[in-house]
Structures are given as C-alpha cells and as structure tokens.
Amino acid sequence: MYKRQVNVCVGKARPLIRDLVMLGENAILTLDSKIDDPVELYVGERLIARGTLEEKENDPSGQLVVRLTEILELKGDL
Image (cartoon, rainbow, N blue to C red; front, top):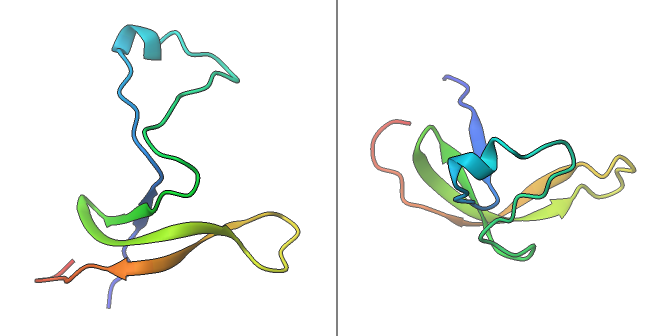
C-alpha cells in the first residue's frame, strides 16, 4: 500500500498574469467560492471526494480538517 498526497481545493481564481505578478504581501486574491461551499479533494489531477472545511475540535491552534460529504466512484488505481 502506498501513501498518496491529497490536495484540497477551496476555490479557483483566474487573474491576468500581469495582475498576478504585481501582487505583494497581504494582497487579496478573490476566489470563485464562498466560505460554506464544498471543497474538492484530489489525488493528482483526479477528483476523489467533496467535503466541508471545519476547525478541528478541541484544538486551540485552529487547525482545519475536511469532513467528507461525498466520495466519488473510483475506477482503477490511484
């Protein structure tokens, strides 16, 4: 069994390259999603599940976790 990296996508932005290179520290990049929208979980480029972001219970550091709400049908190896 191999460990795979899971990437969580919270939204997308499509700025012009010239605007992107001008962003500095503390700049804000507006995403196409709202705070309550589902996030998407990917292994590589393959969408495997959706979920919601939550703060980890009883964790003063405010660490985020993903609560899975939908697992997509997986065909083949990841």
